[in-house]
Length: 123
Image 1 (spheres, helix red, strand yellow):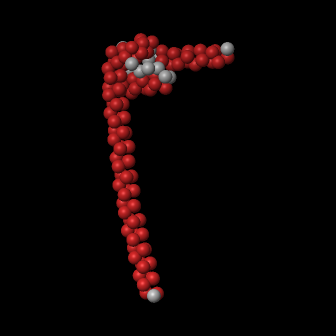
Image 2 (cartoon, helix red, strand yellow):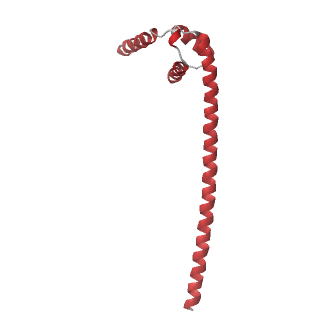
Image 3 (cartoon, rainbow, N blue to C red):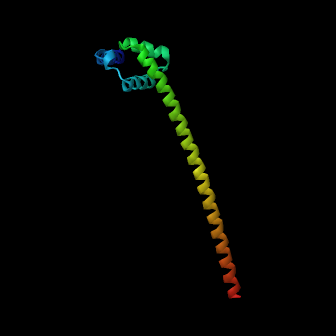
């Protein structure tokens, strides 16, 4: 029971904090913040849910849905960029491993040649 009363208190505090927001105070950053809150709250960030949240916050739904499209496009671009960076890092690590392997092989050959020279001189 205590958990539910604390949850209700937290919900009312959040509702009170958002109640002062009007359509005029809405910005792109605010929209992104709402989308982040939705994601962290495990709410599916889709057009229907965004419209529902916009109505609850007394914000024009069209503003939030247009920002949702931009947010989702930018998020996809960022994910693609992160994937590309990972691929480049993997490729660079492979090149480094090949260079180190070649260097180690060259050093091993040099050491073997030096060892054979030393054996030949001692005989």
